[in-house]
Length: 354
Image: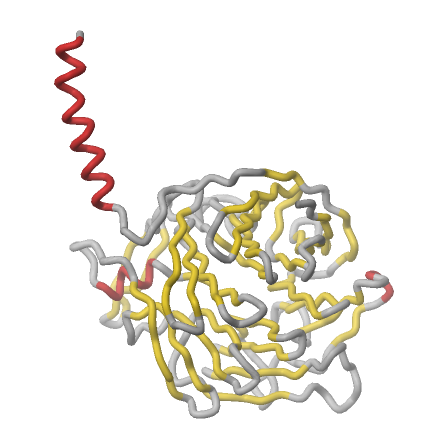
């Protein structure tokens, strides 16, 4: 028996070396969360149809609607009295100036500027919501810009209308900084891990599709994978990647390709899993809604887990929800979580205890 064990040790060591050498140097090993917390939810508002995303504006909850559900893009819930009434904003669905037809990426900047990317017209509209919702007949002030090309996820960086984006298929860089007023890409940065020999660099990049969420002070950004439970932290002042952290399930993108018009298009299959679905950020933490479900199974667009990270990438806690949710928002003081319960058609609220 001792002879057999001694024979196996070099083999085990060799396997370990091979596994270690294949791991990207800037990527941490699979990370577990030191704490878990189960949250009990409270129903605060009944909704008629699905909500695409939630955002917090001071004492109002901003609801972004889906086009097939409402005439207006946004509505507002007063968090002081919840069901006392919803104020509808004068931001309409449509193809005219100041309207959006097919919203994709969106976000609230400094509690007043709301960015919406309209992929049908290739434009970005930035609405000035002011310090509180305004439902007067004058409508909502807005500024409109044409995008130089398609991007997947976009965040407003400043009041000068510079944005940070990803999804540019004309570049192998991860992020692009864009001057919306000039319609030009100012700079780009971030390197993807090397593509396998069986795939092109562009195919590999498309597998890394991710959502972007910015720190409130605008100095950092987190990129959360759609098909892999991996996050990446970026410094926006120095234009560099700080850290890559792999989630507890540690799975990569399982996707295929199909040639469409001379281009290889990503095709999901029975092995494809969704990782992160959405998120929210505060000065202290990153909150990411996690699915982990296969794309051909039930509840693939919903999740019952929220991963919390510090801005240095350190895992803090895993929140376990008592309902499936599709979108989240978190208060600035990290005490209240708001979420969309699409099954019960409710907006729910939970208290977070650190």
